[in-house]
Image (tube, rainbow, N blue to C red):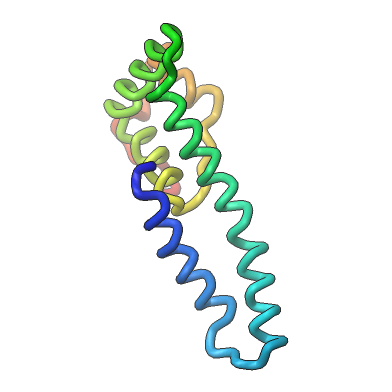
Length: 122
């Protein structure tokens, strides 16, 4: 979903190169691969969960699922801060969790006074 496989593979390649580097001994390569896995596995779990939730949001066949999913897409698309955060997460560039308040902004229950500003971490 949303080119996550390609984005993830690019990030994986960078991470693997950093962990293994120019090492050639089997022990050094094994250690590098273990540290690579320890770094990337939690990220990959998060990316998979994010992708699954996004796919479920746009393919839910129930009336409520369709209404909430479409509203969330519309409200997220109109909010620079949330759109940037969701894009960052879906691209596999890191994990920035959405708070309960963010979720309320995302479905349009509450207006977001920070909607036109990028996140502080951007």
